[in-house]
Length: 259
Length: 352
Picture: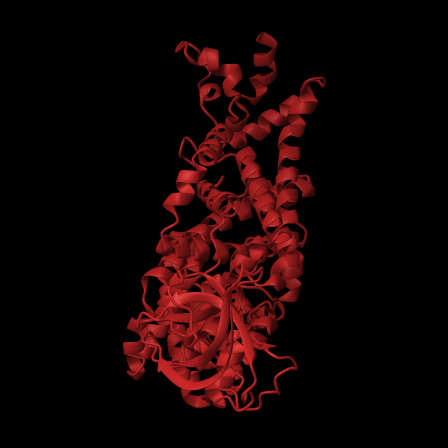
């Protein structure tokens, strides 16, 4: 891969990163906090591409009107280039051939743009609430009826203090549907700590007026009350708390799909 | 046509500048003597590839829509998106080191004796926030600028493992076990120094083969700087892509149930999490949360996971092979792995 091709790839990569960070696309892959760094990194990539093209093309542009001197300099430059060319194999080390692979992330971001982790990933991994071994000092739920809380928040309160701070309040949660081991639908939400590679599901069982027959990955909003029923996730043997559903409705996929 | 050819003539051997359209006609006459001129250059290949990809976008997207493949793609893209800022900032810093920081600075900053330079370089890793993707090119630059390899390697191992961001993340992930933070810092620092000293005793300079980089000696500093940035991003970035693909594959292929059965055996669980750290190739800023979620494993085996991960993993091995050469990576990575597991188990026995 010669320098100009590298410049084009860097330009595409920088452009793809900037585009992903200015739209909601990056939220499918990383935490929102990374956004300014993504923009900065994308701008640096574009700058590197522009500067490479500038240094590569300037001798060409100058040479046309100018005399020998510049041309001579460029000759020397290209002696180096020739040896570095990736096609004749010899010095693959220098102008890195491995750089071709950078087309893959460009492709991934610009053309494919894979969706956020969903029910397949949730089924592969065990529910992640078991990790939070915090003592039971949960603050009281905020006001509202029903009160909107995160799936992870509900699951922690349900598991570690057996719903004491929930009481008989009505809660409203949203997440996607994934089919549990028993074939019944679970409400799940992926939790990210850094990027989707470490995404882990938090799963809730649904009793009462639970939805039925929904396809996996359908986003729903459920309203219900604490249930003391508990199941075990066959994947990691962790406890899955239940929610006693009063009502549910299908909702559009939220902007931020992770918790 | 003549003037066109003349204008391009001095540019002859430069593959990217060869215009396919301009030369297309002549390409068919085998008598034309100027070989390199008639090759299709990287830019043309790239353009063709991109056009094909855009044209076949829909079939491609459909082919990737099976849930497993889709999860793979999501994980692959997200590892790269997460790593790109760290890679770019690391590369820019390493280009600054390579181009703007004079060699004499390192002679003054580090103790003259290599054995003393190792702990200083390890400690210097503490102040540099960032993950391992950025540390590899920086360590390459340090060696290039005359820093003793032992110290540069100690820095390479220490920087991603014990910087403030990583330690804070660890504290947040293990709210009930503050000893994990201490254990991680102590064990990582010990491994970095041990590897630096081990390199002094056993390492051979010819294992490290830094690629020739004539552009770093360019008379124009601007050109040298941007040349270094361009080269390192494509080079280290390419290897990062390989590592991300491997990590995504492991993420999708290894079912968590397998781990479950290993957790009860003390020895097996340590080895399993050490291997998992290598295979998953998580960013050092994220691995604490994953370790916390592996709650069925003992604290010591999770400490091993946290110490090994930032020092040896698939994407790092791939990047090290690219930056320092394969001979180096084949020796350095396994040794680091063994030292890291041993030190982490020892630290765990004392602290946890």
